[in-house]
Length: 239
Image (tube, rainbow, N blue to C red; front, side):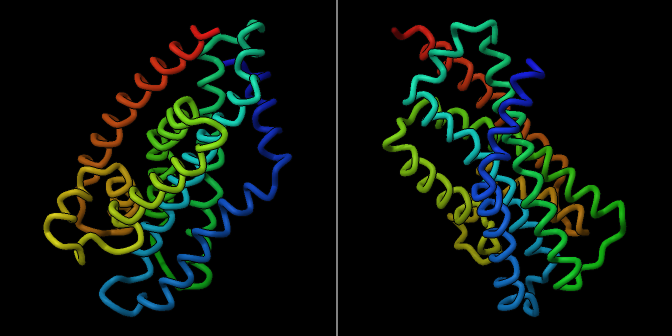
């Protein structure tokens, strides 16, 4: 990875505070709403924290990568190919920025859960939940990059919105999969969003298969990384 280019990309994100604020505020607001409505039912605030922190991490990492579609449309990637920056260096920097933007919504939802909803966990459990969710955001940063390489600046928002809704709802981030019909619950367990939330649920003391979550997310990461590399290589070969 080229450190200078990584710093450049980080500065570009920081110069767009509205993007960061929106990525942070929506999952926090959804957590506060759902914990107020459902936090006293069978689904407690700790469970909702895991689900909506996962949503925030997924969404931020995914959106950051997908924004590369706009760069492609503007010819930015073609210009970078004339510089010493390698393909791998470019993709690694974009992925790293996606991971960095995933951290604020995780921390924001966790802070709201602790301060406003009375969630109490041991220090080790907090660390496992936050760091686990952050590490688990890798496949979503890669998915965003893949969409950024496939979509155009005109239709990328349609891709983003559609995938975001499908992965969030069907993955059980807004409604617990236990409330799903049997067929939909089976579908949920095939989605990476379901397993991302399971990392946080396990850290919060739930009876979940954290090892399975790590394996599934790792496999998704490998497949998506290969797809991003292939697509970027093909795109680079175009005039």
